[in-house]
Image (cartoon, rainbow, N blue to C red; front, side, top):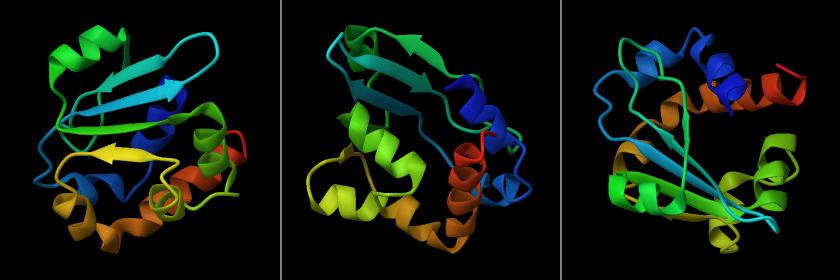
Length: 124
């Protein structure tokens, strides 16, 4: 996860996409060995801070502004490019929580997400 955030921070389009962003993120990956929970603060200075691996209770207590939850196969499908994130939401494979309006308003920065996922597929 730390590597993925560093790859994102290297993108030249992140600073513009991050302008005015408020709110932190929580990601919960459901796995057979127990959930993997990540807390990611909002971008500052056009960069995301390093992610923190936390317990599910810590993530709940943080009351994150945005949360995404799915099983490992779903997240892997999104990163590998075989599953569109919007399709995953519609199919109820990816659960998201939070005010999606700021995310929708940034759809003009969709290329950032596409470049990021492409770089991750190539090994960063």
